[in-house]
Length: 246
Length: 122
Image (cartoon, rainbow over all chains, first blue to last red; front, side, top):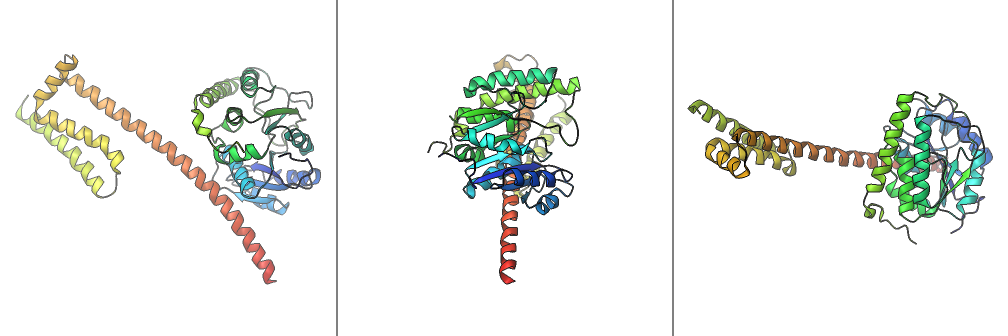
């Protein structure tokens, strides 16, 4: 089932946790750059006016009663997409670090794949990391590239598009654990036989806050990433035995 | 062993059993959680009433000081109870998560229905 880039059966899912400052602007920008798509903001138990701001900007808003993390918020999006027959789900962060201009590129690649990652290091943009965080990303890139039989350089990118088969799988099995939503989701997809691809996208500096360069935090990140990876591979294959085949 | 310590051992074991059974009766404890505590109580009572069983059992396994068998069995049981509690917690978390996700979707659906009906009324 090919997905054409200008199809109106595209759902942009924006997980948002305390993003009242940026969410409205991002929603408007997405509407401007991907006019046909429906926009669902999943308010992940925010304490501020995220839901109200998103609604005012014209997005559909699902409000979680408490914080579940990106994984939980995304599963709401996938489930919504599944019930309403959307053919593609594109995750866009509501802090503005993903440029919605990259969405058509993701959707174009989705015509021949089930899951497409927008990669930050593949040429475009000026996003850099160093130290243990970089080692973690290298390790993940090597292992996950092998698993998915595709060249992946930025496996923790949240900017990604899922096709119908991936939607069906993720509506049931999107991981909620920290880092699970990026790392384990890739393992699940690959082990279920989905086709994973990567396209380069430009990434902007986050509107609020900068990525941490604390070496201890970076080392902890490396440890948790490795653990998440190990656990993802140890899970019995039957865990994902859903109707991915069509 | 003095008579007092003999009675003390039996009384402690009985106390465990009474509390477990009473909590079961009042629905404060589910059967599958009570089972480990119940086993612990029965073992304690057996060892309390017939201390020879304890000596015999440690002799069979090859433990020189029977008291060490008591510690070993106690720790093992506590370990499994903790593990079971953690597993239960994991399951409950997964369930609340699913519920929260469903609630968010149902609320959104409800809101759009309500808007539609007020639009119709106008």
